[in-house]
Length: 148
Image (tube, rainbow, N blue to C red; front, side, top):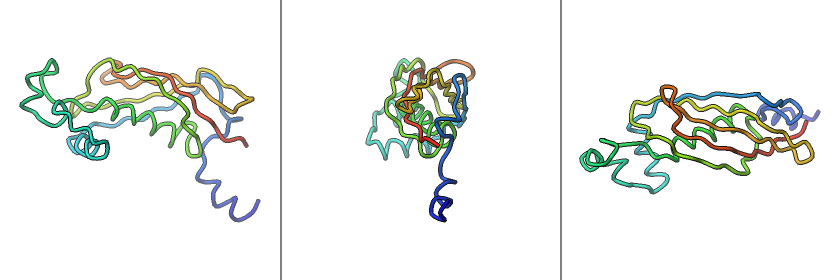
């Protein structure tokens, strides 16, 4: 193995051959005021339900909520950093937003391999974000995984 290959090897996660159906990984993060404001800045989504407490109190949520896509971004965190990890390529994601996330909620994100497609080096995953055991985001994803 060349020095350059060794240098980049540490930046990769699991190879396709190391994966198995049922394998899963988890990431948890408590959503803060700063997270919501930074996500609004990066995404350009300044919907008042996310940033205006007075207006948000008059909605069905009774207060500010985090962007749904902020919770969905935690799914990307798991894929990019844990399973399959660095080197994986996100191909698709379906999402269903089931419940709001508020400042101070801890979002627990779990991805689980449900199918492997060896001829294309693709893995299909169930994806779930939950708060206090209640699913707030559900979906499915397809990831291309590097070969050995």
